[in-house]
Length: 216
Image (cartoon, rainbow, N blue to C red; front, side):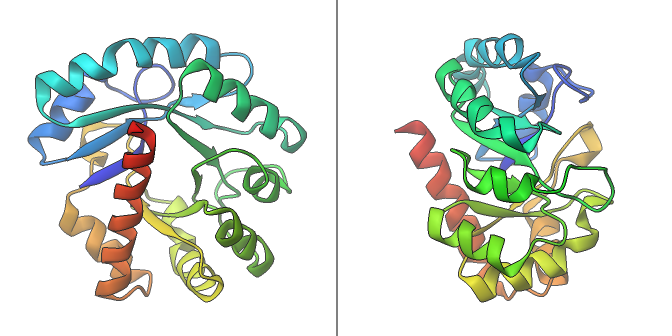
């Protein structure tokens, strides 16, 4: 399992990075990104602390650990600038919190994120065909999520993404120990969203590509 969207105590997760990554390793993960919720007020606190520990944790537990951030409820006009700052601080995976239907995310967030330097648009809700086409053009992955609530629109996201030729990834959006997804759970969630076995395997390859890019 490769999971590129997780949270620690540096935002609203329950686990410190050492425990989250240890649990991921025991669960059979090959790679994990630590992507706590960030905005202009805290990314300079979160990212350097994650960058500091990822190499040692990865070596200790035997998996790839990537430093990242999830830009969350950032005003659309500010997303591009905050994404650039996150990269400068060392984030190797930049996720943007999309327009999920279960939170009051500002309209225009999906488009602004897709025009910025991000890797993944998480749980993008009722993303439009035009936005999915932009994701395809820019090589940004759209997320199928195993997290309750956000997963309500997985079927729509999968259909629109596949019609547009946009890349998909499957992530847990983990906040607690029980949120970490097994590969089989990720597979079943993807199939439940209307994806085929081959489309799920392609989503796994998309995640592998992001890991290679982040390591490069």
